[in-house]
Image (cartoon, rainbow, N blue to C red; front, top):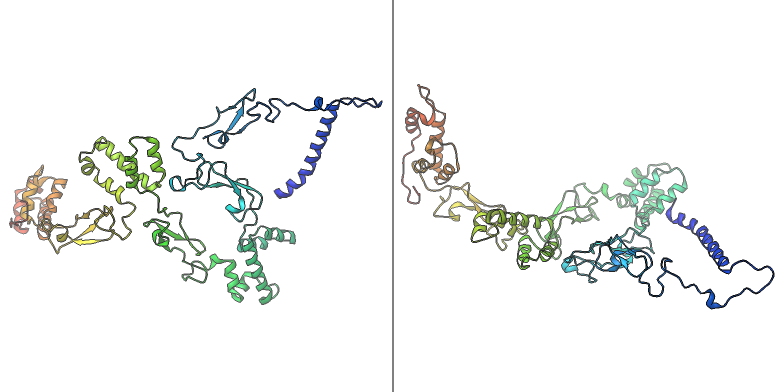
Length: 489
């Protein structure tokens, strides 16, 4: 049964019961009825009720008489009850949960810039202001975090779209069902449905399939009712702003409202971009939170307030950086942060800007940028042979593919100094030596070393244990020392 109908049917009966109870109470107060006509009246002063603790009314010196929500008694969270003590002289707050000192919600001031607040505890407003699909008369209340409105007591009016109305009516077998389907529709949904049916009656034969006929005879009304069927056809039609799968950088979508770097996705009916992944332009970045915390002088409440102004990704990167500082440097810098936690620090500094196609503060390049290795460091890398690429944090040029200046023989001299020398497997030392090689030198050294590793002589001595293999490698894969002025060996 409809809840509104149910309430209407109960109220008269309940009202009658209350009236009867009041009448009974009045008769009890009067005492036995005198049928003999004697005068049993009393003075006005004798009939005035003085009330008492527990009657549900605050009388005289009483502070309370019944439970109230804790939030009405100071900076407490919503939801628990403060009960009245036995003599009605004070509230018992033992069940109440006090707000953290740094929690700005509940201080009586709406602070949108500091705490993203939209209301304060105790604030109410008509449900229809929060959502026009709610019925008039109910009240939306401020949520416990002050960042949204609770609409638990609001009752939805018609909300169904044209397509939902159509599908509902299609499953009906009588006029009452069809009326209920229309009543469940929003004003816009009903208007679109009525336009579709008017088009059907004017253009389609009796008994024709509504969807099949109207799609052909009046496509405007059809796709107005079923917009999702047009969305995804690969064309941005009238009324659409994007196509399924389309994305747009949040900063490009609304540069005054969102930070760049995150993608907004075209919604399911192609009428707008969903912005749930977008980040508010005023939200603190990872390094801004770090700077904010640095000004708190160890006050944890202040630090929590800094984090509250940020967002999940920024705070996650901040925690990673601070964990590195604590584990690697015992929170004491002296150059340790840059030496041991360089990557984590860079990730914090540029996570909100790397990839926005602008070289921002802390950046030296942008994602996808490349540069000739010789331009990155002409004293270290051979020009014209390879490119360096901008790293994931936009703070360094990745030179793993760059070539140095050393010849094959000079790379061998370097590897000889590694633990185990030429016989060692690839190690950090060996890889560092290889990185010193020129394009030709590194290639020749790799060929020489690969042959030795795979070679066995007639006495079944293999690899670097076989002088015969070494001699053969020197013959087939010459690796002479050709001094290069810029080589370290």
